[in-house]
Amino acid sequence: MQLRRAAGALLLVAVLTARRANAQASAEQGRATAESGATPSSSAATPDPQPAAVAPPTHRVSTSNLTGTVGSEIAEYADTDHVFVFTPSIAGAVSNPTAGWSVNAGYLVDAVSAASVDIVSTASRRWEEVRQEGSLAGSYHPGNLGVGANAIVSSEPDYLSLNAGASVTQDLLNKNLTWLFSYEYGHDVSGRTGTPFSVFSHEIDHHSLKAGVTLLLDHATIVSFVADVIFDIGDESKPYRYIPLFAPGVYVPVGASVADVTSLRVSERPLEQLPLSRQRFATSGRLAHRFRSSTVRVDERLYVDTWGMKATTTDARYLFDLGRFEVGPHLRIHGQSPVDFWQRAYVMGPGFTYPALRTGDRELGPLLTATGGGSLQVALGSKAAPRAWVIGIDLNGMWTQYFDDLYITQRWSFVGGVSLEAAL
Image (cartoon, rainbow, N blue to C red; front, side, top):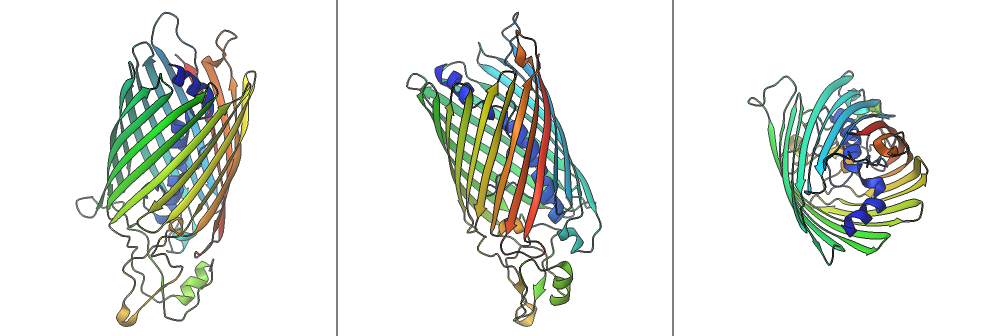
Protein backbone atom coordinates (compact mmCIF):
# COMPACT_ATOMS: atom_id res chain seq x y z
CA MET A 1 0.00 0.00 0.00
CA GLN A 2 3.03 2.32 0.16
CA LEU A 3 2.67 3.53 -3.41
CA ARG A 4 -1.04 4.11 -3.07
CA ARG A 5 -0.70 6.06 0.19
CA ALA A 6 2.04 8.26 -1.27
CA ALA A 7 0.06 8.80 -4.43
CA GLY A 8 -2.92 9.86 -2.41
CA ALA A 9 -0.88 12.47 -0.56
CA LEU A 10 1.02 13.70 -3.62
CA LEU A 11 -1.89 13.91 -6.01
CA LEU A 12 -4.44 15.43 -3.69
CA VAL A 13 -5.14 17.99 -6.38
CA ALA A 14 -6.02 15.26 -8.88
CA VAL A 15 -8.08 12.76 -6.88
CA LEU A 16 -11.37 13.95 -8.28
CA THR A 17 -10.04 15.53 -11.49
CA ALA A 18 -11.86 12.97 -13.61
CA ARG A 19 -15.23 13.92 -12.18
CA ARG A 20 -14.65 17.69 -12.21
CA ALA A 21 -12.96 17.55 -15.61
CA ASN A 22 -15.98 15.68 -16.91
CA ALA A 23 -18.25 18.60 -16.04
CA GLN A 24 -15.82 21.15 -17.46
CA ALA A 25 -15.15 19.09 -20.58
CA SER A 26 -18.89 19.01 -21.04
CA ALA A 27 -18.95 22.79 -20.90
CA GLU A 28 -16.18 23.05 -23.51
CA GLN A 29 -17.86 20.38 -25.62
CA GLY A 30 -21.08 22.32 -25.40
CA ARG A 31 -19.29 25.42 -26.68
CA ALA A 32 -17.84 23.49 -29.61
CA THR A 33 -21.27 22.02 -30.24
CA ALA A 34 -22.79 25.46 -30.32
CA GLU A 35 -20.25 26.66 -32.88
CA SER A 36 -21.22 23.96 -35.35
CA GLY A 37 -24.75 23.02 -34.38
CA ALA A 38 -23.64 19.42 -33.93
CA THR A 39 -21.75 17.56 -31.24
CA PRO A 40 -18.06 17.10 -32.01
CA SER A 41 -16.08 14.05 -31.08
CA SER A 42 -13.70 14.54 -28.21
CA SER A 43 -10.38 15.87 -29.45
CA ALA A 44 -7.20 14.35 -28.11
CA ALA A 45 -5.35 17.32 -29.55
CA THR A 46 -7.06 19.94 -27.42
CA PRO A 47 -7.68 18.58 -23.95
CA ASP A 48 -10.05 20.78 -22.00
CA PRO A 49 -8.66 22.81 -19.10
CA GLN A 50 -9.28 21.03 -15.88
CA PRO A 51 -10.10 22.80 -12.66
CA ALA A 52 -8.19 21.89 -9.54
CA ALA A 53 -10.06 19.05 -7.91
CA VAL A 54 -11.69 18.91 -4.53
CA ALA A 55 -10.24 16.09 -2.48
CA PRO A 56 -12.76 13.43 -1.48
CA PRO A 57 -13.82 12.96 2.14
CA THR A 58 -11.63 10.42 3.88
CA HIS A 59 -13.83 9.71 6.91
CA ARG A 60 -14.61 6.01 7.28
CA VAL A 61 -17.71 4.61 8.94
CA SER A 62 -16.31 2.88 11.99
CA THR A 63 -18.78 0.00 12.03
CA SER A 64 -18.15 -1.22 8.50
CA ASN A 65 -15.38 -1.87 5.99
CA LEU A 66 -17.45 0.03 3.43
CA THR A 67 -16.71 3.64 2.65
CA GLY A 68 -18.81 5.90 0.50
CA THR A 69 -18.99 9.42 -0.86
CA VAL A 70 -21.67 11.39 -2.63
CA GLY A 71 -21.21 14.73 -4.33
CA SER A 72 -22.76 17.31 -6.58
CA GLU A 73 -21.30 20.06 -8.72
CA ILE A 74 -22.64 22.97 -10.72
CA ALA A 75 -20.33 24.22 -13.47
CA GLU A 76 -20.84 27.04 -15.95
CA TYR A 77 -19.04 28.11 -19.11
CA ALA A 78 -19.34 31.46 -20.87
CA ASP A 79 -17.29 33.16 -23.58
CA THR A 80 -17.12 36.31 -25.68
CA ASP A 81 -18.57 34.42 -28.64
CA HIS A 82 -21.99 34.36 -26.92
CA VAL A 83 -21.90 30.71 -25.88
CA PHE A 84 -23.17 29.63 -22.46
CA VAL A 85 -23.20 26.15 -20.95
CA PHE A 86 -24.76 25.20 -17.63
CA THR A 87 -23.74 21.77 -16.26
CA PRO A 88 -25.17 20.33 -13.04
CA SER A 89 -23.87 16.88 -12.08
CA ILE A 90 -24.09 14.31 -9.32
CA ALA A 91 -21.76 11.42 -8.51
CA GLY A 92 -21.33 8.76 -5.88
CA ALA A 93 -18.86 6.04 -4.95
CA VAL A 94 -18.74 3.08 -2.60
CA SER A 95 -15.70 0.94 -1.85
CA ASN A 96 -14.31 -1.69 0.43
CA PRO A 97 -10.59 -1.00 0.88
CA THR A 98 -10.10 -4.27 2.76
CA ALA A 99 -11.55 -6.35 -0.06
CA GLY A 100 -10.04 -4.11 -2.71
CA TRP A 101 -13.13 -3.21 -4.73
CA SER A 102 -14.89 0.05 -5.61
CA VAL A 103 -17.89 1.18 -7.67
CA ASN A 104 -18.75 4.72 -8.75
CA ALA A 105 -21.43 6.32 -10.89
CA GLY A 106 -22.23 9.79 -12.20
CA TYR A 107 -24.84 11.74 -14.11
CA LEU A 108 -24.67 15.18 -15.70
CA VAL A 109 -26.71 17.47 -17.89
CA ASP A 110 -25.42 20.08 -20.35
CA ALA A 111 -27.76 22.95 -21.14
CA VAL A 112 -26.27 24.90 -24.06
CA SER A 113 -27.40 28.30 -25.29
CA ALA A 114 -25.51 29.93 -28.13
CA ALA A 115 -25.58 32.73 -30.66
CA SER A 116 -21.97 32.38 -31.80
CA VAL A 117 -20.57 33.98 -34.92
CA ASP A 118 -20.68 30.60 -36.67
CA ILE A 119 -24.42 30.40 -36.08
CA VAL A 120 -24.95 34.03 -37.10
CA SER A 121 -22.99 33.46 -40.32
CA THR A 122 -25.61 30.89 -41.40
CA ALA A 123 -28.45 33.37 -40.72
CA SER A 124 -29.63 31.22 -37.80
CA ARG A 125 -31.01 32.50 -34.53
CA ARG A 126 -29.93 31.55 -31.00
CA TRP A 127 -29.51 27.82 -30.65
CA GLU A 128 -30.34 25.77 -27.54
CA GLU A 129 -29.85 22.10 -26.74
CA VAL A 130 -29.63 19.69 -23.81
CA ARG A 131 -27.23 16.76 -23.49
CA GLN A 132 -27.39 14.03 -20.85
CA GLU A 133 -24.60 11.70 -19.80
CA GLY A 134 -24.44 8.77 -17.41
CA SER A 135 -21.36 6.84 -16.32
CA LEU A 136 -20.62 3.70 -14.32
CA ALA A 137 -17.21 2.30 -13.34
CA GLY A 138 -15.81 -0.34 -11.05
CA SER A 139 -12.47 -1.82 -10.04
CA TYR A 140 -11.16 -4.84 -8.15
CA HIS A 141 -7.62 -4.71 -6.76
CA PRO A 142 -7.29 -7.20 -3.90
CA GLY A 143 -3.53 -7.62 -4.21
CA ASN A 144 -0.80 -6.66 -6.62
CA LEU A 145 -3.01 -7.27 -9.66
CA GLY A 146 -6.16 -5.27 -10.36
CA VAL A 147 -8.82 -4.94 -13.04
CA GLY A 148 -11.38 -2.28 -13.86
CA ALA A 149 -14.25 -1.54 -16.23
CA ASN A 150 -16.28 1.51 -17.19
CA ALA A 151 -19.19 2.54 -19.40
CA ILE A 152 -20.51 5.95 -20.53
CA VAL A 153 -23.71 6.81 -22.39
CA SER A 154 -24.28 10.31 -23.79
CA SER A 155 -27.39 11.43 -25.64
CA GLU A 156 -28.78 14.57 -27.24
CA PRO A 157 -31.32 15.27 -29.99
CA ASP A 158 -28.89 14.70 -32.86
CA TYR A 159 -26.08 12.67 -31.31
CA LEU A 160 -25.69 9.37 -29.44
CA SER A 161 -22.42 8.19 -27.93
CA LEU A 162 -21.74 4.78 -26.33
CA ASN A 163 -18.40 3.93 -24.70
CA ALA A 164 -17.11 0.94 -22.74
CA GLY A 165 -13.64 0.02 -21.59
CA ALA A 166 -11.53 -2.24 -19.39
CA SER A 167 -8.15 -1.92 -17.70
CA VAL A 168 -5.58 -3.99 -15.86
CA THR A 169 -2.93 -2.78 -13.37
CA GLN A 170 -0.12 -4.42 -11.45
CA ASP A 171 2.09 -3.32 -8.55
CA LEU A 172 5.76 -4.33 -8.75
CA LEU A 173 9.02 -3.72 -6.87
CA ASN A 174 7.42 -3.75 -3.44
CA LYS A 175 4.68 -1.44 -4.77
CA ASN A 176 7.15 1.22 -5.87
CA LEU A 177 6.12 0.75 -9.51
CA THR A 178 2.66 0.33 -11.01
CA TRP A 179 1.85 -0.29 -14.65
CA LEU A 180 -1.48 0.17 -16.40
CA PHE A 181 -2.98 -0.97 -19.68
CA SER A 182 -6.49 -0.16 -20.88
CA TYR A 183 -8.70 -0.43 -23.95
CA GLU A 184 -11.88 1.52 -24.69
CA TYR A 185 -14.35 1.23 -27.53
CA GLY A 186 -16.72 4.00 -28.51
CA HIS A 187 -19.54 4.12 -31.03
CA ASP A 188 -21.08 7.46 -32.00
CA VAL A 189 -24.06 8.21 -34.20
CA SER A 190 -24.36 11.76 -35.56
CA GLY A 191 -27.48 13.08 -37.25
CA ARG A 192 -29.71 16.11 -37.62
CA THR A 193 -32.21 17.34 -35.06
CA GLY A 194 -35.74 16.30 -36.02
CA THR A 195 -34.50 13.66 -38.47
CA PRO A 196 -34.46 9.97 -37.44
CA PHE A 197 -31.08 8.25 -37.55
CA SER A 198 -32.65 5.75 -39.98
CA VAL A 199 -33.10 8.59 -42.49
CA PHE A 200 -29.74 10.37 -42.00
CA SER A 201 -26.79 9.55 -39.78
CA HIS A 202 -23.02 9.24 -39.65
CA GLU A 203 -21.48 6.44 -37.58
CA ILE A 204 -18.04 6.81 -35.98
CA ASP A 205 -16.08 4.12 -34.14
CA HIS A 206 -13.29 4.86 -31.68
CA HIS A 207 -10.62 2.44 -30.44
CA SER A 208 -8.44 3.76 -27.62
CA LEU A 209 -5.36 2.09 -26.17
CA LYS A 210 -3.51 3.41 -23.12
CA ALA A 211 -0.32 2.19 -21.45
CA GLY A 212 1.31 3.83 -18.46
CA VAL A 213 3.70 3.45 -15.58
CA THR A 214 3.88 5.22 -12.21
CA LEU A 215 7.09 5.32 -10.15
CA LEU A 216 7.48 6.19 -6.48
CA LEU A 217 10.88 7.91 -6.35
CA ASP A 218 10.78 8.60 -2.62
CA HIS A 219 8.23 9.12 0.13
CA ALA A 220 7.26 12.51 -1.36
CA THR A 221 7.81 12.28 -5.13
CA ILE A 222 5.98 10.45 -7.88
CA VAL A 223 6.50 10.44 -11.64
CA SER A 224 4.28 8.84 -14.27
CA PHE A 225 4.37 8.32 -18.02
CA VAL A 226 1.41 7.50 -20.26
CA ALA A 227 1.09 6.72 -23.97
CA ASP A 228 -2.23 6.93 -25.82
CA VAL A 229 -3.17 5.64 -29.27
CA ILE A 230 -6.65 6.40 -30.63
CA PHE A 231 -8.14 5.19 -33.91
CA ASP A 232 -11.21 7.08 -35.20
CA ILE A 233 -13.09 5.46 -38.09
CA GLY A 234 -16.06 7.16 -39.70
CA ASP A 235 -17.32 10.51 -40.97
CA GLU A 236 -16.97 13.15 -38.26
CA SER A 237 -18.06 15.98 -40.56
CA LYS A 238 -20.67 18.29 -39.02
CA PRO A 239 -24.01 18.10 -40.86
CA TYR A 240 -24.79 21.76 -40.03
CA ARG A 241 -21.46 23.34 -40.95
CA TYR A 242 -21.38 25.04 -44.37
CA ILE A 243 -18.06 26.22 -45.78
CA PRO A 244 -17.78 29.57 -47.62
CA LEU A 245 -15.94 29.44 -50.96
CA PHE A 246 -14.12 32.26 -52.74
CA ALA A 247 -13.12 32.98 -56.32
CA PRO A 248 -9.41 32.65 -57.21
CA GLY A 249 -7.40 35.74 -56.31
CA VAL A 250 -9.85 37.06 -53.73
CA TYR A 251 -8.06 38.11 -50.54
CA VAL A 252 -9.87 37.32 -47.30
CA PRO A 253 -8.18 38.82 -44.21
CA VAL A 254 -7.74 37.03 -40.91
CA GLY A 255 -10.77 37.63 -38.72
CA ALA A 256 -12.93 38.83 -41.62
CA SER A 257 -16.42 39.74 -40.37
CA VAL A 258 -19.62 37.95 -41.35
CA ALA A 259 -20.52 40.90 -43.58
CA ASP A 260 -17.11 40.83 -45.29
CA VAL A 261 -17.26 37.07 -45.89
CA THR A 262 -20.80 37.35 -47.26
CA SER A 263 -19.76 40.07 -49.69
CA LEU A 264 -16.61 38.28 -50.87
CA ARG A 265 -17.72 34.65 -51.15
CA VAL A 266 -19.39 32.94 -54.10
CA SER A 267 -22.94 31.65 -53.75
CA GLU A 268 -22.02 27.96 -53.41
CA ARG A 269 -21.48 26.73 -49.83
CA PRO A 270 -20.74 23.00 -49.53
CA LEU A 271 -21.00 21.12 -46.26
CA GLU A 272 -17.88 20.37 -44.25
CA GLN A 273 -16.03 17.23 -45.28
CA LEU A 274 -13.36 15.66 -43.04
CA PRO A 275 -11.22 12.57 -43.68
CA LEU A 276 -12.99 9.29 -42.89
CA SER A 277 -10.34 8.11 -40.45
CA ARG A 278 -7.92 9.61 -37.97
CA GLN A 279 -5.13 8.13 -35.89
CA ARG A 280 -4.03 10.05 -32.81
CA PHE A 281 -0.86 9.55 -30.77
CA ALA A 282 -0.02 11.23 -27.48
CA THR A 283 2.51 10.86 -24.70
CA SER A 284 2.18 12.43 -21.27
CA GLY A 285 4.42 12.87 -18.27
CA ARG A 286 3.64 13.96 -14.73
CA LEU A 287 5.83 15.00 -11.80
CA ALA A 288 4.23 15.44 -8.38
CA HIS A 289 5.90 16.34 -5.12
CA ARG A 290 4.48 16.67 -1.62
CA PHE A 291 6.06 19.28 0.65
CA ARG A 292 5.25 19.57 4.34
CA SER A 293 2.13 21.67 3.76
CA SER A 294 1.72 21.92 0.00
CA THR A 295 1.54 19.84 -3.18
CA VAL A 296 2.92 20.71 -6.61
CA ARG A 297 2.07 18.89 -9.83
CA VAL A 298 3.32 19.50 -13.38
CA ASP A 299 2.01 17.73 -16.49
CA GLU A 300 3.33 17.81 -20.05
CA ARG A 301 1.57 16.28 -23.05
CA LEU A 302 2.75 15.95 -26.66
CA TYR A 303 0.33 15.07 -29.45
CA VAL A 304 0.40 14.29 -33.17
CA ASP A 305 -2.15 12.79 -35.58
CA THR A 306 -2.52 11.64 -39.17
CA TRP A 307 -4.37 14.84 -40.09
CA GLY A 308 -1.09 16.67 -39.62
CA MET A 309 -1.89 18.35 -36.31
CA LYS A 310 0.81 18.69 -33.66
CA ALA A 311 0.16 20.00 -30.17
CA THR A 312 1.73 20.56 -26.79
CA THR A 313 0.02 21.13 -23.45
CA THR A 314 1.66 22.15 -20.16
CA ASP A 315 -0.36 22.18 -16.94
CA ALA A 316 0.83 23.19 -13.46
CA ARG A 317 -0.94 23.28 -10.09
CA TYR A 318 0.20 24.24 -6.61
CA LEU A 319 -2.01 23.61 -3.57
CA PHE A 320 -1.38 24.95 -0.07
CA ASP A 321 -2.79 23.36 3.09
CA LEU A 322 -4.09 25.97 5.52
CA GLY A 323 -5.84 24.00 8.21
CA ARG A 324 -9.37 23.39 7.01
CA PHE A 325 -8.63 25.36 3.84
CA GLU A 326 -6.78 24.27 0.75
CA VAL A 327 -6.08 26.88 -1.90
CA GLY A 328 -3.83 27.14 -4.92
CA PRO A 329 -3.27 28.55 -8.41
CA HIS A 330 -3.56 26.76 -11.75
CA LEU A 331 -1.81 27.56 -15.04
CA ARG A 332 -2.14 25.84 -18.41
CA ILE A 333 -0.67 26.58 -21.86
CA HIS A 334 -1.84 24.79 -24.99
CA GLY A 335 -0.58 25.35 -28.53
CA GLN A 336 -1.26 23.52 -31.78
CA SER A 337 -0.55 23.59 -35.50
CA PRO A 338 -3.34 23.28 -38.11
CA VAL A 339 -4.43 20.10 -39.85
CA ASP A 340 -2.97 19.57 -43.33
CA PHE A 341 -6.14 20.56 -45.19
CA TRP A 342 -6.76 23.73 -43.18
CA GLN A 343 -7.42 26.90 -45.20
CA ARG A 344 -8.73 30.21 -44.00
CA ALA A 345 -10.42 30.76 -47.37
CA TYR A 346 -11.21 27.75 -49.57
CA VAL A 347 -11.11 28.55 -53.29
CA MET A 348 -13.68 27.57 -55.90
CA GLY A 349 -11.87 25.85 -58.78
CA PRO A 350 -12.62 25.55 -62.51
CA GLY A 351 -15.94 23.92 -63.32
CA PHE A 352 -17.34 24.76 -59.88
CA THR A 353 -14.99 22.34 -58.14
CA TYR A 354 -13.80 22.78 -54.57
CA PRO A 355 -11.38 21.02 -52.21
CA ALA A 356 -12.39 17.48 -51.33
CA LEU A 357 -11.44 18.09 -47.68
CA ARG A 358 -12.64 21.29 -46.02
CA THR A 359 -13.53 22.49 -42.55
CA GLY A 360 -14.72 25.56 -40.72
CA ASP A 361 -13.85 24.23 -37.28
CA ARG A 362 -11.39 26.75 -35.88
CA GLU A 363 -10.34 24.18 -33.27
CA LEU A 364 -8.59 22.40 -36.16
CA GLY A 365 -6.60 25.51 -37.05
CA PRO A 366 -3.47 27.05 -35.49
CA LEU A 367 -4.15 28.44 -32.04
CA LEU A 368 -2.74 29.18 -28.62
CA THR A 369 -4.73 29.01 -25.37
CA ALA A 370 -3.58 30.28 -21.97
CA THR A 371 -5.57 29.32 -18.88
CA GLY A 372 -5.18 30.78 -15.42
CA GLY A 373 -7.19 30.36 -12.28
CA GLY A 374 -7.32 28.72 -8.93
CA SER A 375 -9.28 26.62 -6.50
CA LEU A 376 -10.42 26.75 -2.90
CA GLN A 377 -11.79 23.94 -0.81
CA VAL A 378 -13.04 24.04 2.75
CA ALA A 379 -13.45 21.08 5.10
CA LEU A 380 -16.75 21.54 6.94
CA GLY A 381 -16.89 18.36 9.01
CA SER A 382 -16.44 17.92 12.72
CA LYS A 383 -13.08 18.14 14.45
CA ALA A 384 -12.84 14.35 14.47
CA ALA A 385 -13.66 14.06 10.76
CA PRO A 386 -13.17 17.46 9.08
CA ARG A 387 -13.32 16.04 5.56
CA ALA A 388 -16.65 14.36 6.10
CA TRP A 389 -18.05 17.44 4.33
CA VAL A 390 -16.07 19.38 1.73
CA ILE A 391 -17.14 22.36 -0.36
CA GLY A 392 -15.05 23.43 -3.34
CA ILE A 393 -14.93 26.50 -5.57
CA ASP A 394 -12.99 26.58 -8.80
CA LEU A 395 -12.51 29.46 -11.25
CA ASN A 396 -10.57 29.52 -14.52
CA GLY A 397 -10.24 32.14 -17.23
CA MET A 398 -9.03 31.29 -20.73
CA TRP A 399 -7.68 33.37 -23.58
CA THR A 400 -7.43 31.82 -27.05
CA GLN A 401 -5.66 33.36 -30.02
CA TYR A 402 -6.72 32.11 -33.47
CA PHE A 403 -3.95 32.83 -35.96
CA ASP A 404 -5.60 31.98 -39.28
CA ASP A 405 -9.38 31.97 -39.05
CA LEU A 406 -12.49 33.79 -40.26
CA TYR A 407 -14.81 35.85 -38.05
CA ILE A 408 -12.76 36.02 -34.84
CA THR A 409 -9.08 36.25 -33.94
CA GLN A 410 -9.35 35.75 -30.19
CA ARG A 411 -11.80 34.55 -27.57
CA TRP A 412 -12.06 35.03 -23.84
CA SER A 413 -13.87 32.37 -21.87
CA PHE A 414 -14.66 31.55 -18.28
CA VAL A 415 -15.33 28.28 -16.45
CA GLY A 416 -16.44 28.14 -12.85
CA GLY A 417 -17.70 25.41 -10.59
CA VAL A 418 -19.04 24.87 -7.08
CA SER A 419 -19.06 21.38 -5.58
CA LEU A 420 -20.20 19.76 -2.35
CA GLU A 421 -19.13 16.29 -1.21
CA ALA A 422 -19.98 14.21 1.81
CA ALA A 423 -18.84 10.92 3.33
CA LEU A 424 -21.57 8.37 3.90
